[in-house]
Image 1: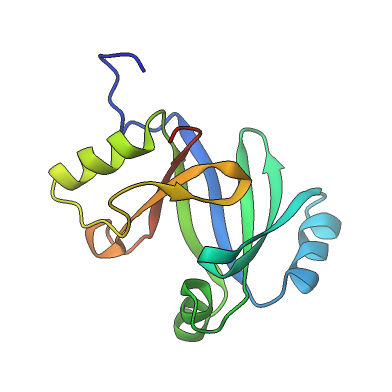
Image 2: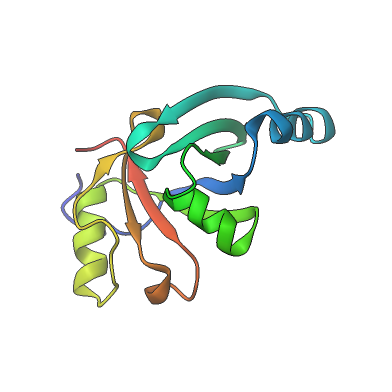
Length: 142
């Protein structure tokens, strides 16, 4: 990593996570109405979700279907319904970005990166510290 680089400064929005009740019902909307192609479906067991990905330029849409009503996405849908769940920012150093966010007073959900979909390292900031939006750092490190 460039010594002068800010590890928390995102290069782009990596993806927007959207909670849905059913991938089977949601995927056709994105493909038929929006003309996108679902290029991957993956289960992330430790997060209790199945994901489906679509690419729009450099950004992706990640549909999230809960595999357990008590999982984070299941609880989100129960409380708020379907909709935007999180925004993920691509960073060069997920661990460094989490540390920098915490040192700036941001409440973290993940103090250290963990494995997410597409083999990316991820770490979430708590929406209480980010104006009500669940935000994620993700990258290829760790």
